[in-house]
Length: 121
Image (cartoon, rainbow, N blue to C red; front, side, top):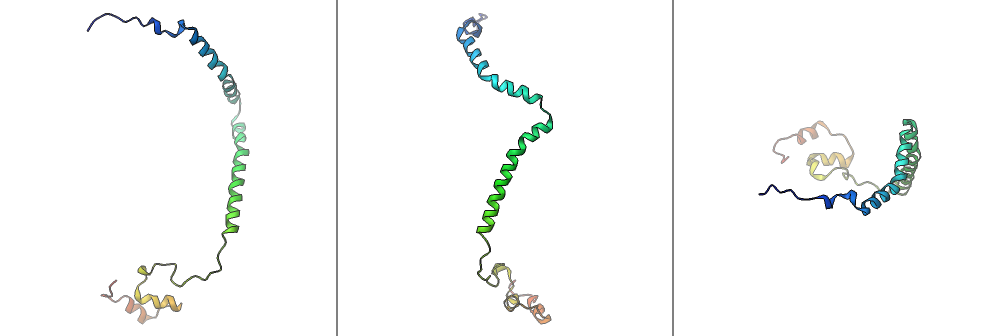
């Protein structure tokens, strides 16, 4: 290890004409964004929110239009619902299938048979 220092002055950007052109080019390109940011600082909160009102209303109208179209296109089918189609057969106790198929309320005897232990349930 040596105590000798390296001369890094050739890497200093201020001595290069290319660096000045690069800074000038960046400043020129950024002037519109800097002007926009300066103007935005002078706007009130109401003006900033108002700037988003039109795009938000257009988006909401688009979503509403698509939703209405889908609701009108995919209406209810006229096919009759199959009995028991709303519940998987594995969840219906065997004693209860008669009640569903006949569309009636269970009797006391039906409830006693359905709750009988050793039914495989």
